[in-house]
Image (cartoon, rainbow, N blue to C red; front, side, top):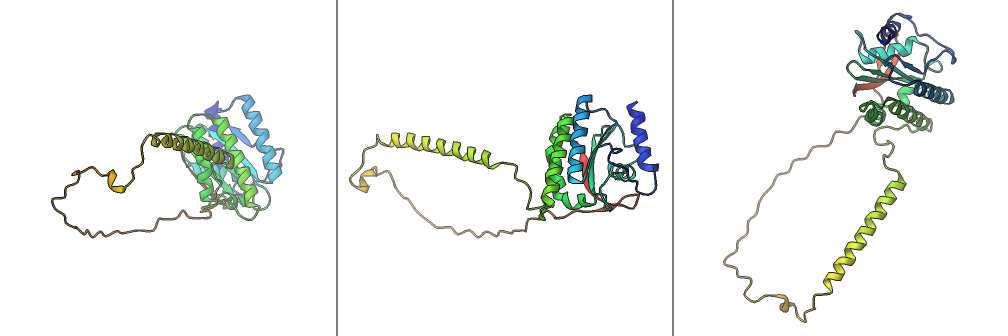
Length: 262
């Protein structure tokens, strides 16, 4: 049954319509789990969560799972399924879709409209680093929830006028964690200093610097100087590009995105 559903999904991406379709909010499925990766309870919870986020942001956040890509690439299937099934807000069809294919463990995050602005190439790298930790362990509900939460955060940030991008990505360590780490380090440093100070108290002070020398302990038999010339070459570190790379789907719609294996 799952195989049949996956085939139907591929066919819908290919042949449902040649021009972009539009669906009402009640018709949209924000979670299409053809690969059966979620339990019934997880499916319901994730569907409600992504639908709520999408409506609040006016930005569709979609998850699609399939058993196989058929003859399509992950990018083609993600783009075409989004275009041909009525996703996206407004004339620019703002939103994104995360595709997971289980046959070869492929994934692709397709962005459209404002999604191209909010989820830059660097942003997609950041988001995928987070949710792929879950997908790699087959913790799909956790991975899809992580994806939804991060997309929401990135869209809200973009609407402040300063999208998350190369050189301006969220910090992975919170201020609280940093403060705790610094506090622990300070305590350890104080303890070590006190221990060393206690050990030094057993050493008696000498009246003169020469008193610290052991007689006849240093005997120089010769000395010379060597000068070594070193040539050091440096090259500038390549900076991660900013913004989003784009391509055109079969429907003529412009998309951004990125993907790989998990």
